Length: 138
Image (cartoon, rainbow, N blue to C red; front, top):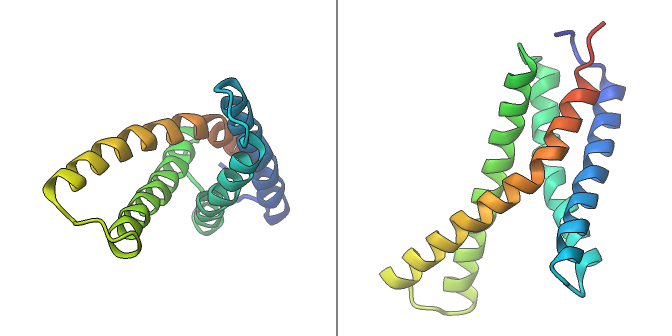
């Protein structure tokens, strides 16, 4: 792989962000969500975190293969979704004053795992587009 160019990294991030928003919008519209646009925009803002993380990692050290590139983006997206789940749990306990019981933790963990899998599946098209645009061969 060649050293990614800074401009192409930005362009790849913008394209992937649009793809991610379109996938989320389609998923929410298909489920009949009235606030599909707002949710798609929220998910795009969250995706900006893992996309920027992956692009910075690629700039520092280019991936050795396309599979390694997608894996690094996947790990960044997983980290952001785990942090989001932890923040949601902290909000339930601290702000909403739910008791931090074993039942709450186990139920929340199960729901969070299902949601994380869904988020990562919806992020796959953006991951693939981002690495394809940013890591073109010479």
